[in-house]
Image (tube, rainbow, N blue to C red; front, side, top):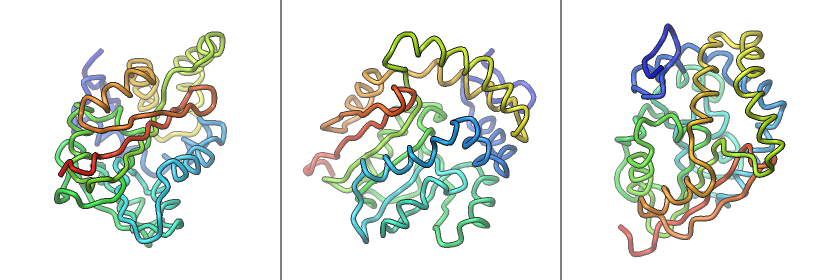
Length: 239
């Protein structure tokens, strides 16, 4: 089904559907993610900060930042971190919980920032939710300064076949069931499972990033390939 049913977005990822869905889950979003990931989110975010290797004072854009929980580690590392999201509900919760973070409303396909504004750009579990992820990657390239870095953390494909079968069963059966117990909108997690299954594998995403103009693309698997961090650089002469 590619249309929204109730409070669940479809795989066509219409902007208003996705934004509305995240508005509804904003208040309990971080708690739900921690439960569904079996407590792995903190570790994954730590690995993302390491991958981006931010220096104090660097300008960092965290796109699809939601409530800002993914932005806080960059702030603590000394970066001038900006959290950007198109869900006003997420931004409202984030501003209340993290007043030290700058929150900006913005669409990943039309970012409200000037060219070459950031030394580093990152997106965690959000590229998959952009209707045209290639356009999103191009926009991230535009706002990154020459020589700047990109880090994309996203669900991916387990690298061990037997584990892949177990993971798929968890996604389609256990994940929605757990979400019903802890989320304010469990239907949103049916979309989550569907969108993860439809997402390209590690090499497919690496190719997409390269095709949009980024260079030196490489990736690192986390938790057996459930999650992967893709890292890339904007060529120094690309402005």
